[in-house]
Image 1 (cartoon, rainbow, N blue to C red):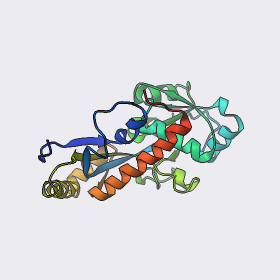
Image 2: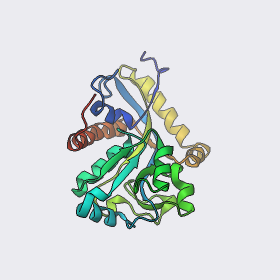
Image 3: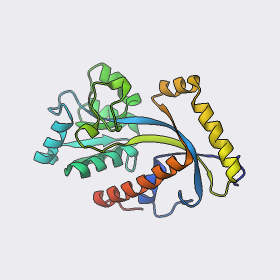
Length: 239
């Protein structure tokens, strides 16, 4: 019910699901409205240390030369990791086979083991492997370099305008009274401004990033259009 007590935690999945499933229980633009964005977390492109791919330019060049020798692992079909790499392939005009796994752990394990050369992952899943030299970071898909990994360039440095992050937000039923929505938004903004909350989010790999309802709605609208194009280009058909 639109009473201010029914809140829904959403992530990037709400903007890709329309291109994965024919039937969904709700329409993200008609049935829900934004309270605000909570946080984002960056994704990275990584490679096995034995790979001759040492940076994003190497990866794109090799995809153009012989895509059959490359493949990339993700936590699964339809994940932000999958769609982000498909967008990169579209922007770069290249091809590379997708190897979907059931979760991050098996994807990371197989890339560390050398079964798949390229990985798309968040830092939480790979930090120890990067630190020990068992994986090498090629680029972040965030719009800009990430503070904790300043030596890792952003994809946007080679492909201007590119930027994909995993994000989380709060929404409510679309008929929630404006005054109630405003109170919820204010409460969320104040909570995310607290240093302790920011530290806790940072500790699990997230960056506190409040966005007011209009900005979050604009984000959703823009990404729905982006992923619609990517799904069509990648031949992803709703089931």
